[in-house]
Image 1 (cartoon, rainbow, N blue to C red):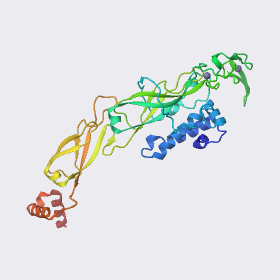
Image 2 (image 1 turned 135 degrees about the horizontal axis):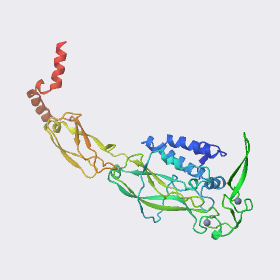
Image 3 (image 1 turned 90 degrees about the vertical axis):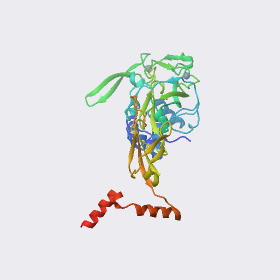
Image 4 (image 1 turned 60 degrees about the vertical axis):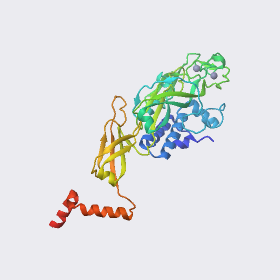
Length: 380
Ligand SMILES: [Zn+2]
Ligand SMILES: [Zn+2]
């Protein structure tokens, strides 16, 4: 079943483009994955909001949705599997570079332009997809194959919507110029504006026979697999833009971009902050006293280092250059290991006896903090 995109955005069926845009921005900021790490519900909501906006901010898709309950019009039928923005088939696209990073909210600026007179507004919509990476993938970089659904220009009619790209007659409303004078009633009186002819959408032509492939939309839905090299060092919430891999433009406008919103899954042991990694390791109390080797996880491989004798609980060791690579620099952050001394949780008789012997041989002078405490206690 198709979702009710209007209720997803909390707007009425008669909402204006501005109302939709404003509702979308509000909700998208609220549920943005970067602000809701660990909140699966918000992340799901964010996908729904984007899907709803993708449809309702696009005239053709909105009209299709109103009419058929699906953004794709009747020819595709049914609802999309999985929701969200991504598709699930493979196409055959070649490797793409990425063109840079955006501020987290820049992603919204590509959506929802309402006029269609300038070249900019004919630009196709951007497609936003959340990419889930493991900590290792983000740290080391990875080539990802990303499945997307997007609108592409219909090849059979070259995007015109007319059969064979030729079945037109001249628009009777504007006489083929594509422009028309519209009179507007304002507080300054009647003002005449020349704008795109509404009957032919500014093309000067009207379709005689619709293209069967695209039902006259000029677009077809395509599922493509885009190959993207995700650079090492990318972090949660960053957005990668892949130029020109979004939806097709209107009236030969430029293609939109593909925006990849990076989300990084939690690691079982390591915590990341920027380029540094942090881990807290419980060690046996004997190791903390005697010192010895300790193995910790790294990004690429396990790392062994030596705990010095008499290591106190809470001590932190810095292992240089074992953190995450800087995105734009050829250096790495550090790995910080914090020691938590663990006391034995069981004790047999013979060990207990040994400990009693040890206790007899250690006096308060071996414990500087304890000694200071006793001094304060007895001074008054
Ligand atoms: Zn067509
Ligand atoms: Zn016209």
